[in-house]
Image (tube, rainbow, N blue to C red; front, side, top):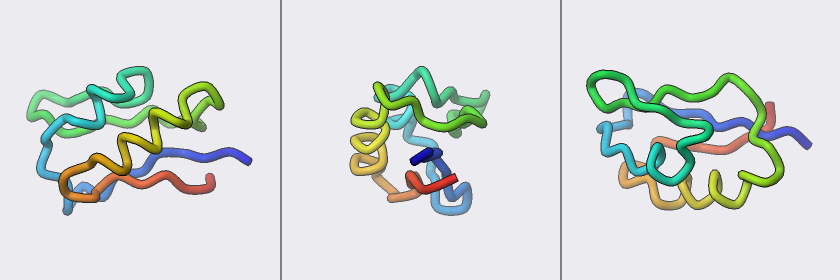
Amino acid sequence: MTEQLKVDMIACDGHGVCAELVPELIGLDEWGYPVLANAPVPRELRKHARKAVTLCPKLALSLGNR
């Protein structure tokens, strides 16, 4: 199963928690909003990706099937 991170840019406030938890998959733009890798989440990073989804202050981050 391939999963990919998605962000609801309307809900996101740009806290940057996600980028701190999974810098391999999430960067920040010049305003502090997430820029997601356009790729499936590798198996070794799934645990970290799920944690980033759980800890998103605005619940704007999700992990779903591609």
